[in-house]
Length: 281
Picture 1 (tube, rainbow, N blue to C red):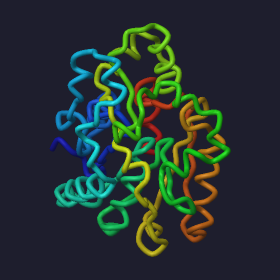
Picture 2 (picture 1 turned 180 degrees about the vertical axis):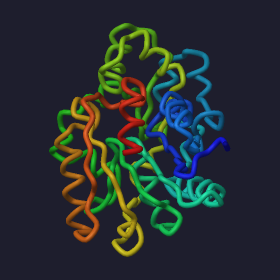
Picture 3 (picture 1 turned 60 degrees about the horizontal axis):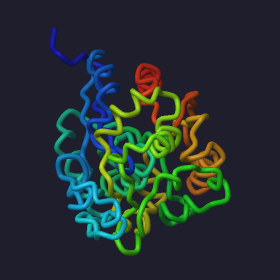
Picture 4 (picture 1 turned 45 degrees about the horizontal axis):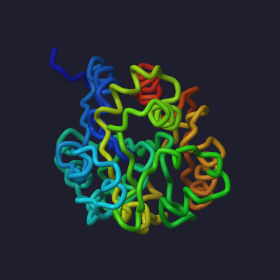
């Protein structure tokens, strides 16, 4: 018997802001054990490709607030191109199930606009869906997102740094707890710190402001699923539901399949088995 069964699917996972491919490991293990092909991508400027401000490495908090980001020149189109390249590489196995988390939703939307014929399904895991709204910044500013607490972990001046910046190396207990509540609210502090150790400090500003919309003819032709996270304090449930509704109005002939998990913003950490089950059923 071969490693992959005849009903094996090919998954490509795209991380969100500040995250890396490594954050998908627990879900990848679950799916691989079931015989699926699983790949996770480090987006440009993330993971092993990340550039770190010198002040971040030196723990110089004052300089860190203003030092320009070494990834400040990265655009959403760079994310798109990296995903499309990987989809084409994986397409020898058939069409790809493309999963995006949080800000990764912007990037998978753009990728689907380029190669809709190579994508079996788009999965938005509490992810930004640019349909009526043009970009991530506009979506985040909607009234339904007002209760988000993610702003509490931002540091520095984004106009000076060229990035939305966090400090995963800040050991101050109050800051650590803010990060846990915003991103990993249903895991222990000890578990959160393991995941936080892989976070990158900078999300390029351009990624939030570049136009991310697709068209009904291309992006809108791909079947799609939205996985709601009902205890999310970064992308509030009301904002998730508004994005679902706006996307469905944009392509009324191809509406979201909607699933829900009783998790915070990062179910790949708190309930990887449940997430894997939703992805395969």
